Image 1 (cartoon, rainbow, N blue to C red):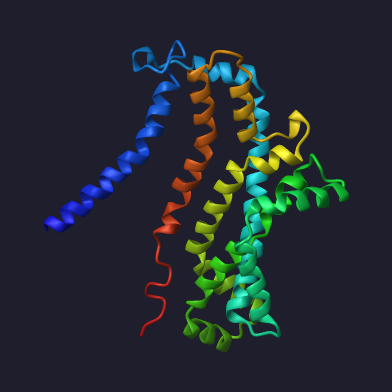
Image 2 (cartoon, helix red, strand yellow):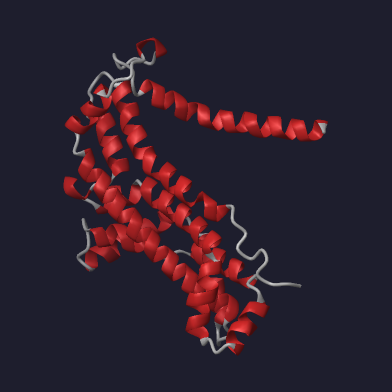
Length: 267
């Protein structure tokens, strides 16, 4: 009992420690005089209005939504198809191809930036949505994650569906994908957050203000003030940047906690 209480205390203490900086950021985003003091706390939207008047944050927000949503959709589709093929299908060179995918996971993303930039330049895609979206749609981590999930896919379900007349495509779209919702939701959350917070690649590949994403807008907003840092406005801009990722997690957490295979097969 004491051990259980101690573990709960550790978990609660850790959670509070992680939530405290965010709570401070939200509270200080309402400060009146842009000072790092809770004495200036006031429930007004003045700092948020200043953010929208100083930079085109609405355009940055829309760009980030477009890039993150399409990147997430592409990553989920590609990784789910490839992961299922590597896990449940036999074809020549399967293990070698998967090994190549694994190798890409050990290459730092910064190494690929310059080759990717030259590739996008040759394709005349610099400063476009395509350049922001395409590199994030493919990755070894997503394929590896989905493959590991499909390796635990019940053979009994596959055999039963095959007996009922399902071909490979029907087996994938009607059986495997619905049961893979927890893994797909996890991959979608990771991909969306990574794409939403991406800074270096959008900074390099975009030139015009109309193509900038929200992390770039936050950096521009911080640099737009010369000698005095407007902390209240800066925190307000940070809160706007953080809201979508929090909402995505809250909307999909039920899939993360759901055991879809429970009761599917009677042993």
